[in-house]
Image 1 (cartoon, rainbow, N blue to C red):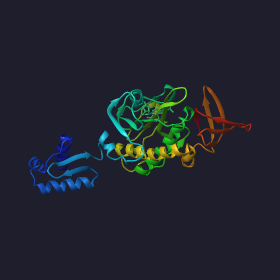
Image 2 (image 1 turned 120 degrees about the vertical axis):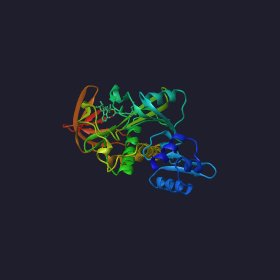
Image 3 (image 1 turned 90 degrees about the vertical axis):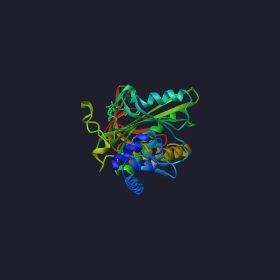
Length: 319
Ligand code: BT5
């Protein structure tokens, strides 16, 4: 009965289905229909009931759609507009295209499946299984261009918090753009900017999060993991995406008021980089030392064996 009821509501979406029609299709009384609807609502299905119209399935726990994400957003300072695509090469490219067409701050591009996701420096981001999050957010912060990379750090804090809210799992931040659980990468963040010489036109923050992947391509076996490997039950992508966006809206507001300094303490508390011996690779050369701190600009301070303090603005690190 439950699956038949859901199938009818799903098929009808975005139209309502009357109680009378449901009772005929499902061969039961209207009271029985109402009871089943109530049960489904208790299981987390969002079903709207409107007098004289009937029932509308707004989102189900396992459904991943623009509506399923949007219906979970808290109305706040960052008015999100969700653009959901069943498949894209890269949400980052689509967001860039939309930004060039003048898309507003808060436009969010989400792909159910992303077939040619990008990392930094032309590296690939594997997300073609359609089991993770591929989200790109268009922002227009009023800050000088050199500060744009700080948004990677802000987003990392937001994603760590969202992961913990939804799954109870604690991830750690590896400077600048990786989230790790038990040393394996579950999330990568890519911040790209479109700017004139004197001002930022837009910043696009791309978030790739492994959620329900069970296998990865061979070259990622020792590097990658997904949240489902650590959570008690398979996380729902719509819930996670909404939690990330809700959390980011809050943290971004703080960032706009106080800069990176506003989220620095939280960043430090989630960091697995600080205090560790690391190797930084920058433009093909290496520096070894201890990660001493991040400063109020998000720059990593590395002390080498000769006691010299290096300021690392970008790069890859090995712990
Ligand atoms: C990143 O780059 O980690 C940033 C990834 C950003 C992806 C998002 S998805 C939404 C948006 N749309 C896009 O097209 N991109 C963004 P980087 O630090 O350069 O790391 C890339 C490296 O991570 C690769 O060279 C692999 O070693 C590893 N990697 C690739 N796919 C992975 C995955 N699914 N899980 C864990 N590691 C992965």
